[in-house]
Image 1 (cartoon, rainbow, N blue to C red):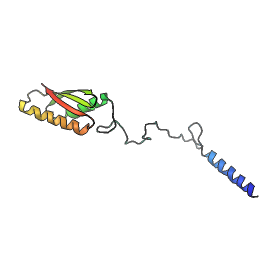
Image 2 (image 1 turned 135 degrees about the horizontal axis):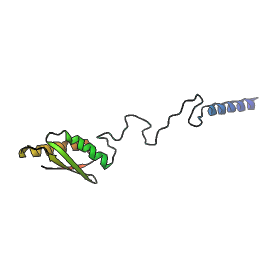
Image 3 (image 1 turned 30 degrees about the vertical axis):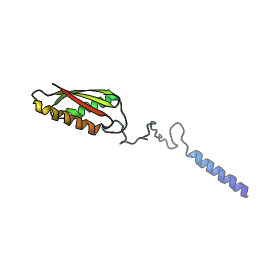
Length: 130
């Protein structure tokens, strides 16, 4: 009697385990199971590595675009170009017309401050041209 109840209990446990398994990505109720890509974030919405200031290394193209956008709002900056050499970012600022020569160091300093705050993984070098 005892061996029969153990065998029955084992069979019941096996049956319950098998009914919980999905086939072809669908559960028994027809609901599709959720799969996430192997990015380490498991579908978390606030885990986007492309956010500015995020400490995960992105590629130079995205960093270049976001850095140029960041200093576009600095007063006195008309345009910029950025080149990279490893962890060094060389920023050349094109100044707005009519900017006084005494204002140029302030504009360079403000652009460098914005970039150093938002991109701490780079050593920022700023120069300007008219």
